Image (cartoon, rainbow, N blue to C red; front, side):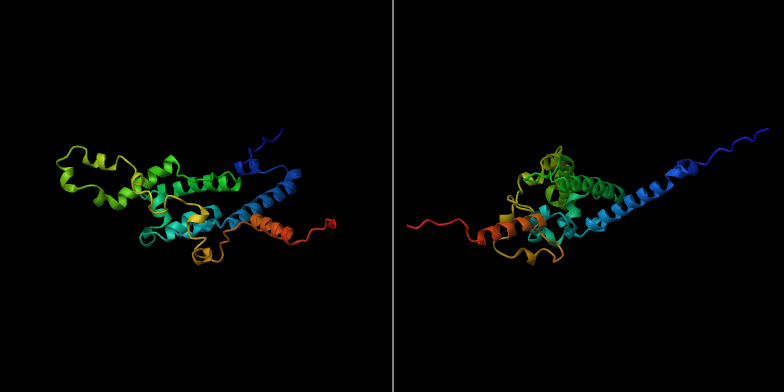
Length: 221
């Protein structure tokens, strides 16, 4: 009489066959090691904070950081205060995770546009945060009780349709944020290199070619 086979537990069923054990362990180790390396390389823990310096982990965001650093908002608001929902902590970190995943993908693939413009979802968050901080200056409590749709008519347009210079200015290129006037190192931390390595190598090669004398024979006059 044969013994009834015992049903394997879920954990045992998820394990690979013994002949694939070593290969599976090595693959899992390599995958975890690569994952931790990417987290370290991208300085991922900085995104859990409200430190504006986290926004310049990608060098393409340096103009945005520098223009904010010279604006009046620097004293009262960080990047997250404007660009992340503030209604509850769960929505805040969910938005940061989804938006950060999108940004990291675009920057890794080098697919960012030359002119960075807020997406529709981001623009809605920014507008809501503008109203949240400046509500008393936008609406009048006295008029809300007497004028129909007073709140709607005062908030139906985006704030930056008029306030186009706040806080980053209209022109956000490398030549418009103080690069020509002051050294960028005065505003960007020492551990943030604003010039990518491939561009440094290219500039060095160009300078080396310019300094090498021409080897072509010259014809006498």
